[in-house]
Image 1: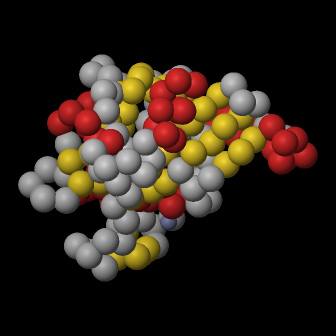
Image 2 (image 1 turned 180 degrees about the horizontal axis):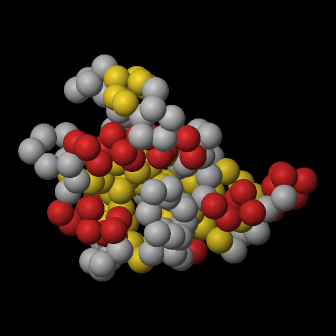
Image 3 (image 1 turned 135 degrees about the vertical axis):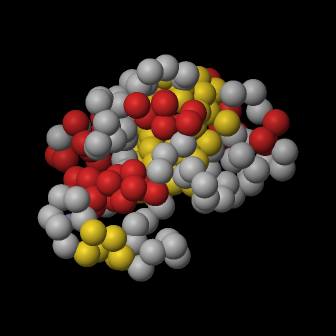
Amino acid sequence: MSTAATYRCAICGREHPGPPLSYGFGAPLAYYDVSSWFRWYRCHLTTDTCRIDEKHFFILGNIRIPIRGQDKSFSWLAWVSLSCANFERSLALWQTEGREKEPLYFGWLSSSIPGYPETLNLKTMVHTQPLDVRPEIELETSEHPLSLEQQHGITWERVNEIASIANHHIAG
Ligand SMILES: [Zn+2]
């Protein structure tokens, strides 16, 4: 947040504050697919977890992307779906010291991230972090641009481009 005061937006051409180094999604995409009339009984959404129909289980984590030549990283705060067993396990360990020793959990990426080919249902591994730190989401190694960015890092120009796209596509 501190590197540049403003950046020139590639979408509207104006100067915006930032660029921010993180963008997030308030809920998994599947939540928005449930009509708002039914959400109150089909969905249970918190700041870090979401359950739908007691059949689909999601957790929020960071897809961290190194910025080349900087000691900072950019991150997408995105949702992944977990198996029921792993979801319950992560809840059971929520307040447990040493939980970062958990084995990796498999997760399907459950956010549609703007500025890439479709990211929904990319395969990921979820790394549980120490107390009070959100999990890290590692994308399966593939030729998908999001996976390539996580593997190889991005330039500062790309951070500005992501900010331009995200500002105009993510409502918060
Ligand atoms: Zn703009």
